[in-house]
Image (cartoon, rainbow, N blue to C red; front, side):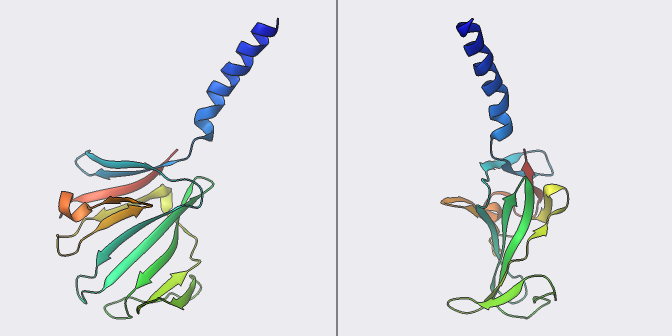
Length: 152
C-alpha cells in the first residue's frame, strides 16, 4: 500500500513539474531556424539593444516575464532625436549614468507574447542579452525577419 502511494505521489510530481518550469524566450527567424531558446525566469530581464540607424546612438528595450506574460519593462534612449521619446502614461523618465535616459516601469504587455523584429545590418548591431548570455543577431542574421516569443 505504501509503495503504491509512493508511486502515485511520484507520478503526480512528474506531471506537475513541467507546468512549474519557467517559460522560454525563443528567437526564431522567418525561415524557421531557431537561433536561441533561453529560460526566462519570473522577473529576470532580457534586453534587445542596437544602434539607432539615424543618430548612431545606443537604444535598448528590456523585457521581463510576469506570470507567463512578456512585458516591455523599460527602454534606454540616448536622446529625443529621430522619433525617440517618452509617451505620456507609459512609464517615467530617469537619467542614465553616462548620458541618455531610461523610461522605467513601463509594464507594457507584448501582444501574444511575440515581438516581431527585422534584424539590422552589422552596423546596427542588434543583440539580445539575458544575464551573461549574448546573442549577436546582426552578425548571424542581418536583414532577416525574426520573432522573440515567450513560450510556456
